[in-house]
Amino acid sequence: MRAHKLRILSQHFRIAVGRAVRFVSPGQALAIAVLGLAGVAAFGITPDTSLDTLSVRSITRTLPLPDLVEVGAPDEHYWREERVERGDTIGSLLARAAVVDPEALEFMRNNPAAHALYQLKPGKSVQVATDDEGRLRGLRFLAGNGELLSINRDGDNFVAQQVSPPDDTRLTLRAGEIQSSLFAAADDAGLPDSVTLALADVFGGQIDFYHDLRRGDRFAVLYETKYVDGEPVGTGRVLAAEFDNGGRTLKAFLWRAPDGTESYYNERGQNSRNAFLRSPMQFSRVTSGFTLARLHPILHQMRAHKGTDFAAPIGTPVRATADGVVTFVGQQTGYGNVIMLKHDGRYSTVYAHLSRFAPETRPGARIHQGDTIGFVGQTGWATGPHLHYELRVDGEPRDPMTVALPMATPVTDQERSAFMSAIAPLVGELAVIRDLPDMRLVSAD
Picture 1 (tube, rainbow, N blue to C red):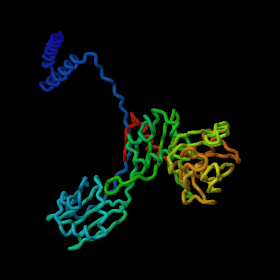
Picture 2 (cartoon, helix red, strand yellow; picture 1 turned 180 degrees about the vertical axis):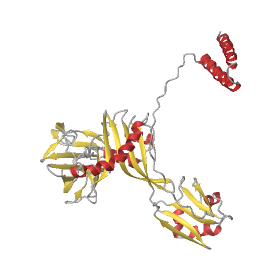
Picture 3 (cartoon, rainbow, N blue to C red; picture 1 turned 60 degrees about the horizontal axis):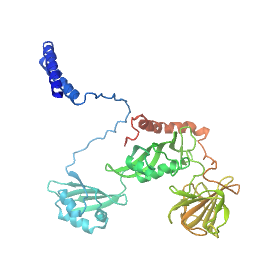
Picture 4 (cartoon, helix red, strand yellow; picture 1 turned 60 degrees about the vertical axis):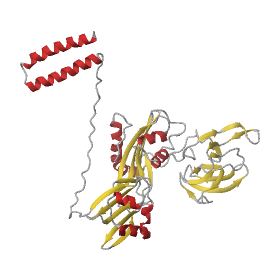
């Protein structure tokens, strides 16, 4: 029955095409026939299929033109690039690059400046230049210390040197959507771990990344990527970021004030960071909260717990939650190894049960927010490795997870105009991601 229907449809179509041929050219008639047969076939396979209307959005960006470079005499050497493969030696790598030069190999084996070339890691690139006879004329290799190793032939001799590569910093814009965790979403978006940690630090005073994240939360981040010979070799600063968290949109832009200090501010010039971080560790979990009545795990008595306990492995870095001055470093009976900081105004903080102290943490030392001051331990009255953290206002302990924390200093009225001009290009970059139909799409460089 189905084949019978298709034959009937084909007959009707052939009659219609025959009539149309009298009024159109042979080429047009052929086009009509092809389209019509495709339509009959489609109808025969999926009669109820309807095509969705696609939403089309145009995004226009003005890109700067590259600088014109005067081209000199053509290079008489042949440059090629080879990637290090597992099991490669210097000899096998150069042989694959068509280098036939025993003198060059002997130089690389004996010259100390060329020893960095022996740190062959799979995936690293080596650029070589040869002459018509396969003799090595030049070699470039990015060493593990970030220096650019170059070997050049000078007559019958070779010269090896390591120099700092030319500055080639580009902007990279990436975005992601939270499905399970920040790090999982960052991996999906191709974010380096250093950028993910910086993103968490930028919004650490406004988002508790252990409790506040929701499925469907989105982020976008604009950061610096450093290149050498066209290859990415590292990341720099986060210049701008946006985070949609539970229906609220947070933005942060890096701005350097006239006095040279850098910080992150939202588009209204308010400091994105609180004067205090909510947590003294970037990623941890609360095992015991602030309460006035808790069964003490060692004394077995109901006592107030005037701080917050964060579980973490021994050796986990502990950071200062605000700028301040060290007032005490040492041991106290219940606290074990403890650090106490005095902050501006009415605030002070306590960090207890530490395994050890950071070398710079000394009485009277000036500490900045986010500095590592010690490491998680199990000293004093502690049944397991964790950090006991206290926030005190006028000497009285307060719940650090719920107390209203002061904001850091905003942009001054005198600096507002310069600030708005400086962040305008960054605002435009973040807008590119918001205009995309799917924010999870990655836009790089």
